[in-house]
Amino acid sequence: MADYINIRGQSIEVVASDPANPTVGQIWYNSTSNTLKANNVTTVGAWATGSNMNTARYLLGGVGIQTAALAFGGSPGTGPVGATEEYNGSTWASNPTGLNTARTAIGEAGTQTAGLAFGGNPGTGAVGATEEYDGSTWTSNPTGLNTSRYYIGCSGTQTAALGFGGYTYPPPVAYSATEEYDGSTWTTSPGSLNTTRFALKGSGTQTATVAFGGVATGTATGATEEYNGSTWTSSGSLNTARYNTGDAGVQTAALAFGGEAPGGKLAATEEYNGTSWTTNPVSMNTTRQGLGGAGTQTAALGFGGDVGGSPFTTAATEEWTGAGSPNTVTITAS
Image 1: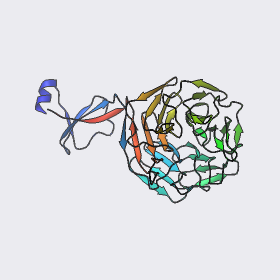
Image 2: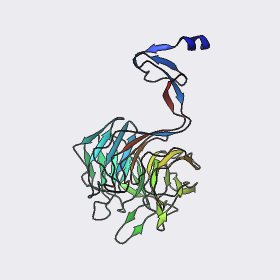
Image 3: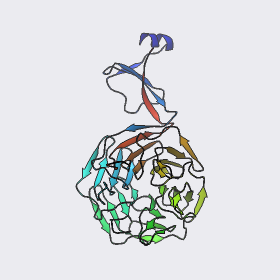
Image 4: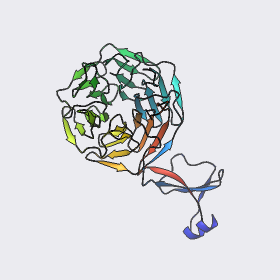
């Protein structure tokens, strides 16, 4: 303390607990932990382990932000479930009311208190069923997708959602069709994906979405396309072609993590700037595919998934802090 003051010529605030919203460059002394701390800006993103989900599963839906996320549907490996869980930034809490139609490979949109689930596979093939979540219960909408499908790409909000691509079986059919939801009905858009595919992901709004990855012509693709509310335009591809990734962010600042490639499951993280993808040097701690995702490019959440082995489903949760985000660190003297 004395040495720092003599060198800098200024005093350091002494507090019993860390400030709730420190400014970048702020320094303080925590008298409870007896540590000198500072708030700086991260230069490289990092994944940190969070609390496990209550139900391990894969091919689940996920929406919301890092501190208020919603997980629903998927399979623990024994068949589709409707289980719903909410994350508050530290722990998962199971909601007693699950989806009305349990399913996997589900479409999702919205937030923790205004979620949307559509499409998916209840174990008997593709459905178009649509359900809305109000923060406590799921309500079925009598109007489903115009084209029933699962492994569908998705984005948007509960009242302005987007569904695109997808798959049905039998017979095996992949789709490029796009549909828009207005809170009550689905309308087929005249704009279809340029690359027909399924098991793809999307980030953004109904009128500004980026779609990426998936399975096209029988193999993983890195194809990326942007939707402007009426048409799709091809953009820079993922550096690693993959499908069933985790996703977060918006059209001009998206995040892709995990997934499956021809070589196996992935942990790699990529960031999109609205034009091209950049691979971040830091990968997820748990390699997996079919995981849920939520949040933004600088504050994302990855949860659940298929890790291989037996049992192959995981409940693991990871929190992402992207480069450029404020970060509190402990200063140590040598």
